[in-house]
Length: 80
Length: 149
Length: 88
Image 1 (cartoon, rainbow over the protein chains, first blue to last red):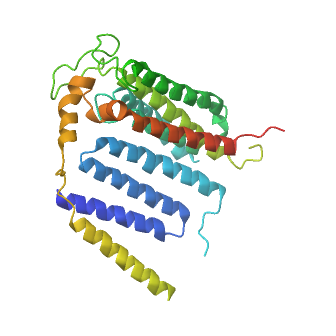
Image 2 (cartoon, rainbow over the protein chains, first blue to last red):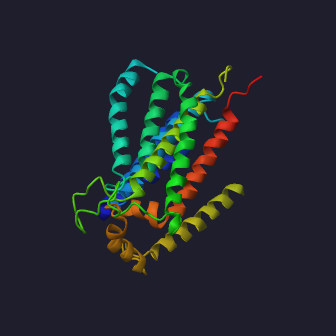
Image 3 (tube, rainbow over the protein chains, first blue to last red):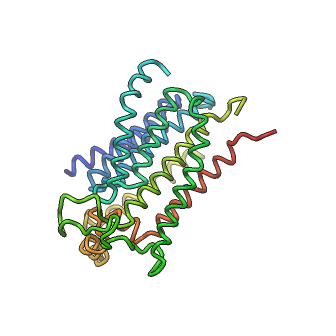
């Protein structure tokens, strides 16, 4: 069980780091949504299904959709 | 968006809508509640906006924004119902009327829909509020920047 | 110079957080649990709801939910005011 927690949290950190590292903003948003989904899995493992549903709905779906809508109206690449 | 996205979202949207409705309606029995179910339904709205374009959802904002006020007012009115004792007092629980049945037995039980007093009504109010509010925000944000704005 | 400053700040922050997490209590072992116990034992009898979390959110701690609804309402009103169609 502890190994699963460690694996999930490590993947969350990896996803967040990827979101900060990518230059392509769309890839960055998708990495952020993946980190959010893994975070909701971690909430589920910690026996908090309420928070898991909220995190999956808000963090993974709605935030990603709003970011994608914003990226579509601006420049898709990060500037130096 | 491409035809793949449209076809997949035609399949996924009804399932996610049903799941969101289930989460809202069974909020007093199973994990979830008005906020979580509303977020799920609002993510369906975001999916439809991304897949089919925002233009055809523009007229929905005129219906969604008053619905949000209705949800907020219903929530506050339900809270005021208990003002005989205290604000947010659950007057309907255990009264025998609407949603007034006691739980089948204490401890783990299969659950009954007709329990928990004002909790299901508040779940519906908050769910309506979250669906309408977040849906209208997503539609308005996606319409932002058009010349006919 | 700036880069070294950032590295030092990162090291200090990481050390602080890791050191703090070394003192975390084991999962599911709070120091005081009288209130948790009260909610778990009495929520089904008092609120008649199987989902104790919803019983807390909408009944025992209703003011929290009222504040959350107010925050959401304020956010939606702000977005609508900013992005609405201006006539004329």
